[in-house]
Length: 506
Image (cartoon, rainbow, N blue to C red; front, side, top):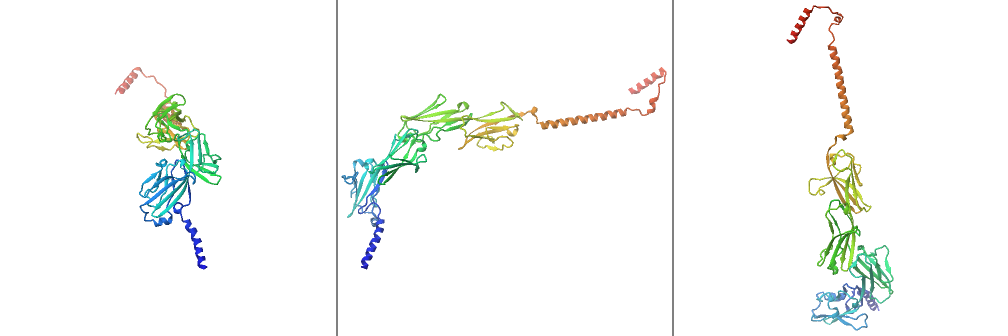
């Protein structure tokens, strides 16, 4: 009894181990049935391989003479099978007329134990039970695979146009009752925070946007607890970039308004495309019509030099096939106005104001003084200078209380938003010369004090000089002041006067 017990113990111990190492697909005799679910329009591979033991035995490749026969039973096993693909011992291949361009063997040489059937693309009528019979030498093996098809339909069909109502439906060939259908976008719940789950298999998107494009997955749950899912890529023909783009341009410079499609129209079989620009305030702009051999999806509008009068909303309308899609673009012009019109003299009080048309409300401004070497591209070598001493460096206005030579050069007003720098405008400050009438008050006080001190010094010198002169004219003998006059004869007086005259002439 002991040997019998030992044999039974080893049998029941090794049986699960051996069964766990038999891969789905081809095994000795009849293989267990497999089920493959594939979305309609994609490729399906119905697996059929050698068992692990046979694969080890045939490591040196299978014999040259191998025959493979794939048959389809249709929707159920009871239906009469028909040949899908047959490869004889001679290598001659036969294919069903309806599936001839779509079926093939993954390993055309049949020398590595892979006899899987590939169907591309899969159609809804391909549903059914498939059976493979492989013969070589005296061996005969078979594989059974059931193919189920999931159908995802779009209405209207591709290309889906941005902002047009879209209906997506999902169903399968499973025979049980459908309980629930869920939709997931990019492996997460749909565009909102909630999950899109319905009793039916349809999902409506009333105004599809470019954010709705990408990978979608529909998941079907049936009454027999079967859960089936399919993934597909939703392509929406619309415009690249933000929904309502705003272009910030400095007054006097050129502007390019964007109008670029998300895909090349010829990717959807459309070769005739026409684009038309118009200004919403009134008036039609240039037409851009493109016909066959379209190699571009961009239709920008170029404005050579813009001013505040060019600011506003523009519309780009693109006709694709029998449908037209449009996008509005806003042109915002940045300008600088100075408080002084005409020449600016040194010492003037100057205020520069940065203005923006069609502000979105989230912009802020920054002033920078640029130092640049003489070059064609001034911005390329520009370096910001310190704005210390000025009352404003952030905000729309820049105030310079007294303009000086160090303020000469380029002042730049940059416009910033949440996404970064949006645009900039420059102002060239040139000073004509010094202004005498507006000399600083400190210097005027010093001059007045110096002139007063000089006049006081000159007055003191004059007083001293007069005093000295008066003192020099005083008599040497004060006693002579009391002398009285005496009569002298006339002749003697004349002689004395003549003598004095002669002395004077000498």
